[in-house]
Length: 382
Image 1 (cartoon, rainbow, N blue to C red):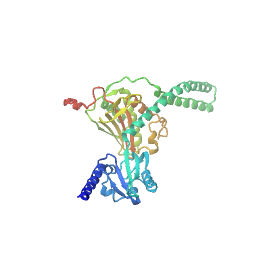
Image 2: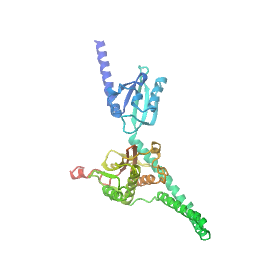
Image 3: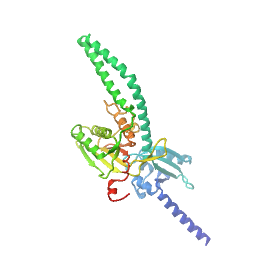
Image 4: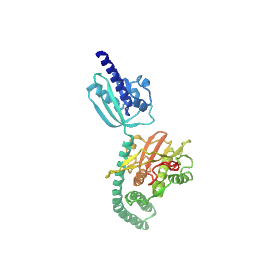
């Protein structure tokens, strides 16, 4: 009788444990000898887009990309028997559309020598906000730099240009080309300083409710009649989207810059070049403001997606920093300025990129009193 009760209790305990692991929101894997996958919970099946039946036919080295840190972590646990963690790891797999940023936790399974439990925790939204705070710090650094540049470079630059113009009146034709070169290069530096000086403008924005679809339509009209003549621009709008509290001209500058970058990424040689402008209502994203306890809702998602060549992975961590560019003649200030304007509106910007798919997403606040889509209001919902 007592033995039977113990057996029943053990069976119930085993069943409850498996149910508990299956209910966890984080992907869990158990690997054994030769890193063979022996167990995966439902979150792991969703993460790797493979069922447990498929996963169990593979080793960990088959599931993740070659040289992935998760392989070395699992081997280290098998070798030392100790628990190890690694944070901010980009995990790739042949089933994943793009690398995913995760925290890794690996440890030995008690009473099962050689077996390793691996837990993955995605950092998508958290990392997006963390990066955005870094972008804000970069923008503040450039603001200080802009003030110094304006004072310390513009004044002597004017003197250099003036001296070159005076020399030009007393030189022969051969030397005149050199003085003209000095003037042209002085003008080029002056334009660069003017662009950087924009970052020093810390005046608060004059805001009003702005229909973001009007902004996108205006930007599209400029693009298709100019630099984007050979590119197809597709609209995928949520018509119920509430207004953005902001400055219309600044928002035009943001999306004009993003579309121009998308056109340049597609290039002139790609016959099927396409840019997709999308809007959506995402009520789940909230941002904690520095220096305060309040959390701001950022429910409006505006995306610019292209099927161009993509952004090199080594540039992605610093993409919105000033002077970072892939263009031979670029200044690297366009995306830094975009990040500053979006930040000034209280929003955040993030980028995902791989060949044939690059998307810039801006998450923006809704105008006060418009925290739900208009269609809900029409239906009488609060």
